[in-house]
Length: 292
Image (tube, rainbow, N blue to C red; front, side, top):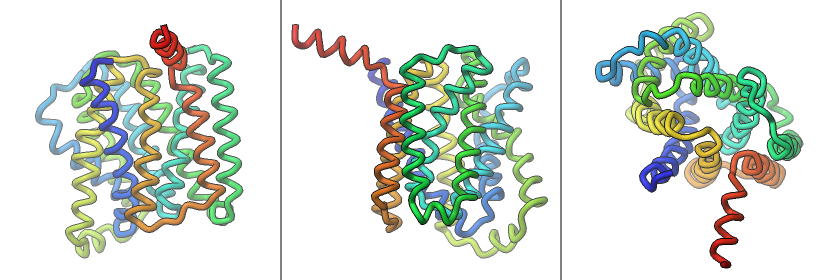
């Protein structure tokens, strides 16, 4: 990667990590699917005027919008109501494992022994997290976050089949397609949307602005830009910074308590993801070169 791409790759996980804390505050006031709809609706309203529709790709983008926006974030934000930001952020690291499995099934990508070992380590970490009594008493939100991560990962594998679309183009048209799906789903499955809008304070509106403009408009644009320019295994390691930022926000700003079981499980999950995604041969080559 060029230095500018490395800087971008460090920036987007920090934006996403803070986005978990913002979403946690948002679902405390807005119904979660409605919050997701507002997020993508705002992104669509701001971005769609600046990019042309990629007509030949709209069908695939529509499918991606269902998987990586509507289903994924509706599940994650609903689950976020019942668990801590730090726990949710650690659980979503399983997205990397899900992406590898999905790519193997649908794109026929070969799973290396390193990938299989990393998956095994990550699942061991999940066992530790599931051993936490606070998690055991709230399993439904946990499974919703995991299911949302699986849906997101499946959509990201499909993004690789689009080629060079452009981050803003993909995000804008995915948001245009996702917002109506989410608003309809919200008014079918949820209640209290009008009351939430009427009683929202400035911080609640700031949450929607952050999720729609910064996390979506900037964070995802960077992500799709990098994903279009570099192989997945070059970009994915930077996702490891997301739980670091999220845990820091959850514990430092929101007063959450990190238990030993969740902390140990989270470290093991992230270690497993690192085994899968980091190009260790490059590090060995650099170390050999420096010794020489």
